Length: 294
Image (cartoon, rainbow, N blue to C red; front, side):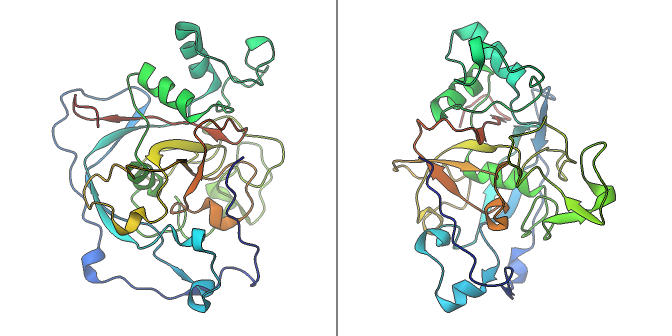
């Protein structure tokens, strides 16, 4: 059972209380430095640098003390410095995962009737995979699961202290989003969320500023970290590896079935048992720029 932490809305909208960081919070971008490996096919180089991790906004429910305790695990906001790393441009698709299971004999997602990818879903993200499945796939591919900090850095697309990978609004002008052939109202969703019938092909919506697709929506994505509710208060400033203890594993990014806009924000943390195989959770891999695995 996925641990749902959705708080019923008791206010109209999300009513933000102004929150200002000091000038020290200005994003400091650093070059990635020499890369002996060169470009990695299918991956994007995320440059080294600092970013504010966690929720920089205070909701009115925070001020009133109405926020449930689990909703406070994205605070305190803290400055994190990361080394450069590679990140998959797209969520792992069914075709990629099929190559993995054929090469290794690893178990297939249980919804693959007869052990085959559902017809017409080759380019859709794989799902119904556990944390162990995701970890095994990334290692087979010569990669690894990202840390939670790496995932959030990548998802933000170098937009410091924003709510979504594209800015602070859940929708965007029609000309900037929507899959090919979709209707064009004045504003449209910038990600595949709030739909009842599953994910769409990877890359159907525009990428963020790093060139990464579906960082919000389509499927949630497993990360390497164990879940620590208070980890942000003790997290190291440089390359935080995640909590050393914890029963659950973290997954990030929101999925096709989510409609609560807070669950779709880049700071939002979710978690479940590592054995969970859900139609809303998939995987995307990372890779260090050095030969040393983190």
